[in-house]
View 1 (tube, one colour):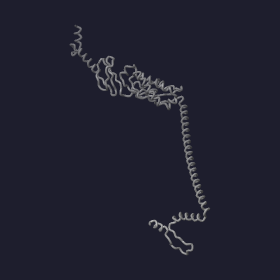
View 2 (cartoon, one colour; view 1 turned 135 degrees about the vertical axis):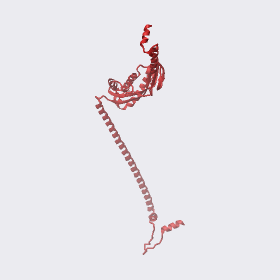
View 3 (spheres, one colour; view 1 turned 120 degrees about the vertical axis):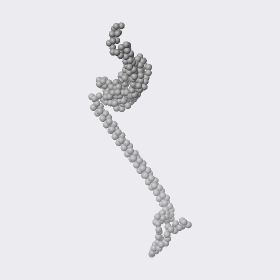
View 4 (cartoon, helix red, strand yellow; view 1 turned 90 degrees about the horizontal axis):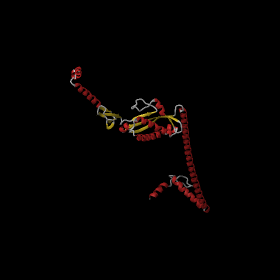
Length: 328
């Protein structure tokens, strides 16, 4: 009792008489209240744990939780696209697992193709957290697991193809098939992640053999160019052959036409000649009249002269007379 009184006497006036308990209690209440208020950032959700068990998921904004470790909150960027880089690392990483160490990057980018050649492959995986509870509780380190699975999938894709396919024509196919395969693996592991995109950024042969590989590619491109030139020449030859064939056909048609006309002229001449042999004078007179019938209408105004006439006489306007006769 004496000790209590002595201790009470040593305290300031405002803490005497049991007031210290109230002060301590007030401090604890203030501390608990301060630690109970938290903010979930935009594009994120908060996963609330009570004694280690998932009890709620809250959206972005200001929230309150039970203090003193009763409830804990893990904030996850569920509405933001995240990415992991393999074989390289860019500045300004948005999450801890985006890049790996320098030594790990060298190991990631070095791959063996299906024809036992080596290739340097750098790629990016873009993903989203779509199921926060699975992301937090199904696997101990989900982002590390994603890195390991992504690398395994890419090595499988590269190992199934030749170095030419990996570096040149097969890149788009690798990206799509790797995305599908990685999505299936992520679903099997229950990571709560959605794979949006896998993109090959830099695919090339190792630096030691890159000059030789470039020379081979240039030779292939030159071969392709020469083939295209030859195909163009071949097309020109086909066009010339078509034009020649067309001209030959036109010449043959013209020759047949001339032969037919000549044969017709011969037949008409023979017919006239037979008639001439039968009656020479009559035939000559008929031919003369037929010829004049064709010639005279083309002469316009006509003046007829007797062979014994000594001067010109306007005898007849044949054209006018014919027109008047036609009118009548």
